[in-house]
Image (tube, rainbow, N blue to C red; front, side, top):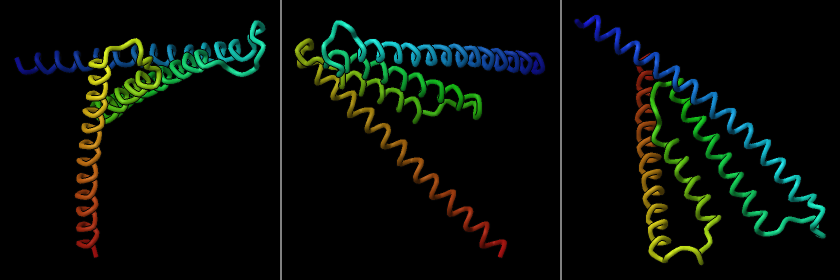
Length: 160
């Protein structure tokens, strides 16, 4: 019975790894196509024949910055999947970083006139919560790294 359970668990782990690999490939294709599309959009916005000015207008800049942030989110998601392959663990720090980038994108592109004040307050609370979580994770990593360094020093001192 235990052998059957172990086989099923191993099979599920293999399936999960293959599904993660497929998601990674699809994510890579999406990010690559997004970069190409960003280049095309940037080219057409800069060299627009109907526009008398060579520079970008503010609405074009917002659209390009939004595109850029979406690509950054894609990169971070790819890094999350890559770390999962390497360590078989999803790091909360990377997931929080993706969330911070997504919220940053929302804040930068936010049109204050379109939203109720309560929605803006809610977005502020989300920013504070994400910042607090990220700080606590970094703090725990710092403590863990200090402990690891102390352990290495002890081992080195014992060898001498």
